[in-house]
Length: 118
Length: 110
Image 1 (cartoon, rainbow over the protein chains, first blue to last red):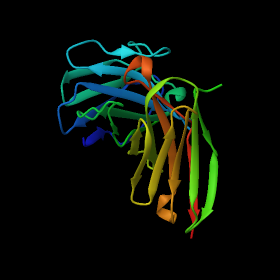
Image 2 (spheres, rainbow over the protein chains, first blue to last red):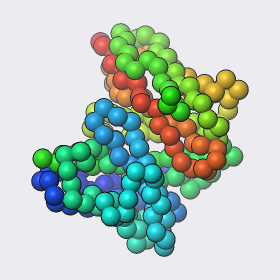
Image 3 (cartoon, each protein chain N blue to C red):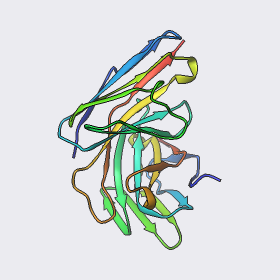
Image 4 (cartoon, chains in turn brown, cyan):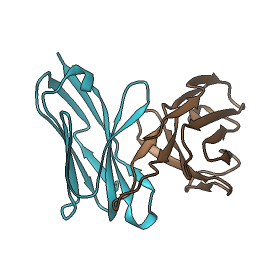
């Protein structure tokens, strides 16, 4: 299994500012995923971050708004840029288990970063 | 129509009751996850299924690939089981992309 930590755990930010969220994993992983969970909603994938390459963004998410870094196999950051109240969400990072079965791999999630934008 | 549908949306049970949460999906999948989210927001992976049935403690998960349906059962429910339970499927075409259900809010009263 993988143990994931995120910083900060929560923050309250002003409109127009940016916040960088850090995700640290206790083991080396190839793929890291960033999700957003808006209030009362389920999780939505923002992007997939592979070490050594550009992140792959899902429809509706762009690099200028959510730049991602992946400097090594245990760490990634997600920046929420030029924030507005609509960005208030829980942001979670996730990794796949390094052990894959024929059906796929378990996913492990970080504790989440609860962001409120005023 | 969402690709992943969960029912019920909300469930209140008395301590000790047997609980069932259902998940139906409309796409080809390679696996299905059951996740538990507590009020703080953190998510715990309960099961990953590609066929059959899995059991862990008081939790049982089943999947019927032909019917595109999975269930999560909790036996002898306890107030500490109160959480949001989320079904997520791994899309067969995309290898490792997860699509999530809306979640089932479970409250177990003592």
